[in-house]
Image 1 (cartoon, rainbow, N blue to C red):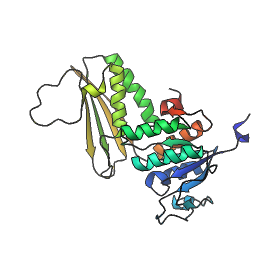
Image 2 (cartoon, helix red, strand yellow):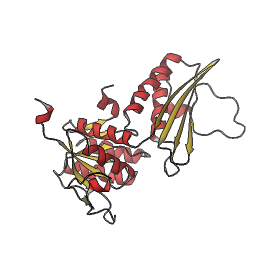
Image 3 (cartoon, rainbow, N blue to C red):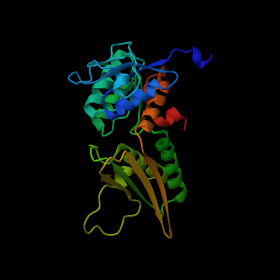
Length: 272
């Protein structure tokens, strides 16, 4: 069957008036096979009642921002980029409504992840700290490099984000460190080093450093360093627009609609 004959995937955007929310609304509006089913903000937000498309800087879409979660059946997939507490509430509500979810929230602790796992037993969820297609290709490159270079190379991850980012290190930096550790055959929990200061002595063999920079309006920069004797390899991804994350999130939404319950990542979406 031609995809042109299929009904569009109805997507609800939670946090529709945030920077990411507006970017996602714009991408949904321009993506064949997708349609904006609902746009949600806090009940006290001044955006409530406004047309989501106009709010995002585009044409009117005929979907007013609402101050409550979508009703059951209003959307096939909910997309959420917010804060951990709101994401947990969205996962519970989405599972109750029978909607698939795409979650890009970072900074989730063990308890919040357990909530996602519980919801994923009822509905399909794509959860990734970074929805960028490029970053998810980078994860594979980093794991492959760590595996090929072997134990004689020292590994550090350095990330930079805008001054308003609340969690550190970024979820992407942690995932890159996990990919490096997986490739190198190391336990990240045992070898991670999040700060260096004072008399720290020689670098322990196998250590993986994860360093954080914050300032300005940096959308997101990540570099993985492999330091060898006589040479250095740097693998870098720089995001210049939030639209790259929005495009990945919408791609994930189109992919996850109709999947069986489970917790998926962007590697599943991309088939890598």
